[in-house]
Structures are given as structure tokens and as C-alpha cells.
Amino acid sequence: MRQHDFDDFDLFDQQPSRRRTSRRARFDDEPEPTRGGRLTEGERVRLAKLRDDAYTETQLPDGADRWSTWDDAEHGPLPRPDWVVTELAAVDTDLGVLKTGKEADVHLLRRGLPGTDGVLLAAKRYRSDEHKLFHRDAGYLEGRRMRRSREMRAIEHRTSFGRNLIAEQWAVAEFAALSRLWTLGAPVPYPVQRSGTELLLEFLGEDDGTAAPRLAQVRPDPDELKDLWFQATAALELLASEGLAHGDLSAYNLLVHRGRLMVIDLPQVVDVVANPGGVEFLARDVRNLAGWFHGRGLGEHVTNTGELLAELVSAAGLT
Ligand SMILES: Nc1ncnc2c1ncn2[C@@H]1O[C@H](COP(=O)(O)OP(=O)(O)O)[C@@H](O)[C@H]1O
Ligand SMILES: [Mg+2]
Image (cartoon, helix red, strand yellow):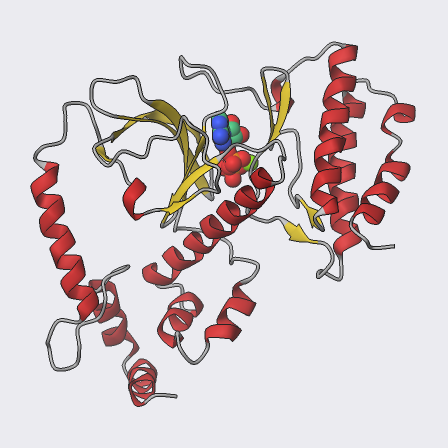
């Protein structure tokens, strides 16, 4: 362990309140100044960016909320759909909330060059407060124990900086899952970009901003119901063939967009091969899904959940 790690630790043990105050004052992604008071390289870059932002913000066109964040973000997989707006001169306009939740808020966003219609996007923003611990935190902490002890302590002590890191891990995990599944051709929205705790996704809905309904909200006739069931099982089989279970599958995390069933909300996707409880995750997805379809009147001879689970287990290579 490096010397300054010990220094911080002693300070925390002996003077917790003083340490907490000084941590809070240096909130979030601000790099710490060097002990000698000189600016670190990170700090210099941050100040230069603040100056740039102060200059450009005065020029934002009317109605826009920010310049496009494309340049600084992690980008979605290639080949990129042609509707993705990559121009640096584009602006983002917040058109309102699609849903607020405990762990994330989803907003409708328009991105485009000033004076054009642009495209609609769903902006999913993970909240830093009240967030449950990211399920892979343990591994994350292990691997970085020596190098990233500041992050580790911030997460352990749930400082505002630490909570923000946890929220960002959820965003990173969901972006990775969506990117992988989109590349495989799974019915998921195209993940346009991720920056910090925010994901920008293909908006599933109409041009007027009406979002596609959740499966839970639709009243399909018997033929549509059967069709939606087979779409859902096809999606589950594709996931299973990649060794994955959704992990939180329900009629709220499936949208029906122009007759197509789309899978969303994937930060907790489960690697069923590495996870000792893998089969149980597959079984739970099947149970939740079939439960909803049975409630809508689909016969159990159609869903045949025993056979479906056996197929998923075999597709995942678990037999
Ligand atoms: N790409 C999208 N297009 C349209 N609506 C979306 C999209 N992503 C999310 N939503 C809406 O936001 C809601 C919450 O999104 P979700 O990813 O399930 O987050 P949460 O973790 O809050 O459940 C969804 O039920 C859906 O109504
Ligand atoms: Mg959800």
C-alpha cells in the first residue's frame, strides 16, 4: 500500500468528522489537489473544460438544454444506425419525464442540429441516492483494491462520491448488456451512448413522443397474445444461448412497439454459466413471464413452461 493510503486511513480513524467534511467539499469527479497544492493534470483538464463550457453555454440556441454530449461519451456498437446524430454542433432538449423510479429516471430527449427535427431518445439516468449496492461491487473492489483504494473506501462509506460510483456501475453494466444483445440481433433498443450515470437509448415510441406501452398495459386479442408469447420466448432463447438470463423479467420490462416485443431494463443481466444459481434465474424469468400470459388467458398447454425451461437450460449449455 502506498504511503498516502495509510495517511488517509489514519485521518479517517482519528478524525472522522474532519475527513468527511473535506471529502464532501471535493465532491464527485473532482480530482484531489496534490499535497503541495499544485494542480494535477486531471485538475488542469477539468478547469480548461469548465472554461470551454462557460464560453459555449452562452451560445446555446433557444430552448436547448445542453450541447450534444456525444463527443465525451462511450458510444454504442457498430454498425451504427444511420439515424444516430453524431454532429458536435447538435443540441439536446429535454421534453419531459417518461418515468421516474427509485433507481433511475427516464426522460424523453430530442437531439439534433438547431433548426432540424432531430431524433427522439430515451435518456435513462441512474440516481445516486438510495441505490442498492451494485451486485458486482465485491469483484470490482477486489480487482482494484491496491490501485483504487480511494474509490473503494468511498463506496464502502457511501460518500456522495461513492454513491455516484455505484450508480455509474449500473449504467456501465446496462450499456454493456444492451450493446452485446443489440449486436446479436436481440429485440432491444439501440444503445446510443453512455456518459457517467446517463444512458441514451433509441426511443421506442411514436414521432409525437408517445412511448410504446409496457406489455402490462396492452390488451391483446388471443392471436396477438400467442404471438407476443412466442416473441418473448424467442428473446429468452437468444439470451440463454449467450449464457444470459434477464434477471428482472416482467410485463413492465417488455415494451410492445408496433407489434414487436422489445426487452428493456437490463442492468442486472445474469451470467447463468458463471453463477451457481444460474438455472434458478432462468426459471424465475420463465415463471414471471408465463404468470402474466396465463393471467391474460393463454393456456398452459401453449406456454408449456417445463419444456421451455429445459430448452433454455440446454441452450445455455447447462445440461
Ligand atoms: N428506450 C425506451 N423507449 C421508450 N420508453 C422507454 C425506453 N426505456 C425505458 N422506457 C420507459 O421507462 C420505463 C422505465 O425504464 P426501465 O429501463 O424499466 O427503468 P427502471 O429501472 O426504472 O424500471 C419503462 O417502463 C418505459 O416505460
Ligand atoms: Mg423497469
